[in-house]
Amino acid sequence: MSGDADEVIVVGAGVIGLTTAVTLAERGRRVRVWTRDAPAETTSAVAGALWWPYRIEPEAEVGAWSLASLRVYEKLAAEPERTGVRMADGVQADTDLDELGSWAGEVAGLRRAAPEEVPGPYRTGLAARLPLIDMPVHLGWLEDRLAATGGTVERRTLASFAEADAPVVVNCTGLGARSLTSDDGLRPVRGQLVLVENPGIEEWFTAADPASSATTYFFPQPGRLILGGTAEDGDERTAPDEETAAAIVARCARIRPEIAGARIIGHRVGLRPSRAGGVRIAAEPLPGGGRLVHNYGHGGAGVTVAWGCARAAADLA
Image 1 (cartoon, rainbow, N blue to C red):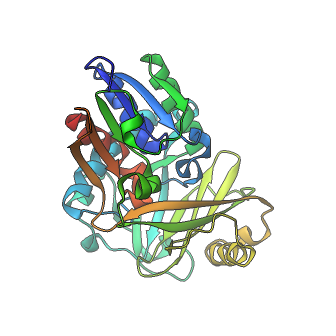
Image 2 (cartoon, rainbow, N blue to C red; image 1 turned 90 degrees about the vertical axis):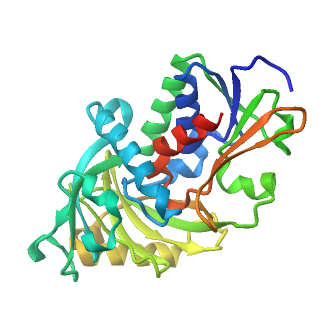
Image 3 (cartoon, one colour; image 1 turned 30 degrees about the horizontal axis):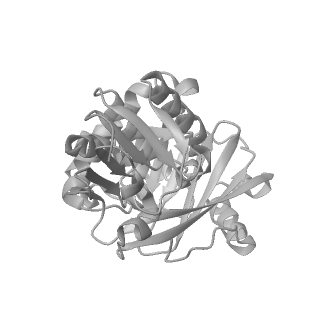
């Protein structure tokens, strides 16, 4: 281990890694990000991405992390072209307020939707105006914000955290933590998306059954409409599946028929880093006297909790 006490190496450049790096840098630390993949090539770049605590634990912590992130996104939405964040209206079908945690009471405007507001075959749901994040733009903005503090992003592949030459190392490697930490609780949850030309849809929609591997959602993003999706536990395939894509389009078209004729412009697959027991934010010593801080296991809600988890990890660093 070398370097001064203010040096930190953050390993991983998805939304968790970059948000943690920015948080540390703006607290006065000298931050380097080491990453196997460029930010635009990470799982985060594939995300939809709507703010909503989805498939994430531990329940006792998720509410506070999510709300901390929500407050940041609400501010960033003032400059959507620059930050990639905007506030958008939509409906979460088949969900009731009574099913949610106490965090729901802190989300302005979240309410039970009238039956006529819920599209498709659904009759119940929630209406809300939530942050919708254009991830390629947002990841670029996070890189720029880090660079403005003097932080850097370097392409490096590690076999061990002991290779990082800084007093503090922060593990934001997502699914990569399986091998780096020997964490058998980590598993991939495969998500497949279809990108189509937007036929004029302005509101987002989700109907995500936690017990099913097939979900239905669409998110209007600049230049495209993102259709989803899947939540295939333990599936490590990264190539799009043609039958799955057709099923996604069909499910979304049952909600908005005009989607059936939308031209397909791309396919995306990402492996969400789910973990038994939920997110791991903890610290332990490194050989040679350094400190290793973990921040991984966010499943399908990394964007939703990114800023709250970044602050919790930075507190340990």
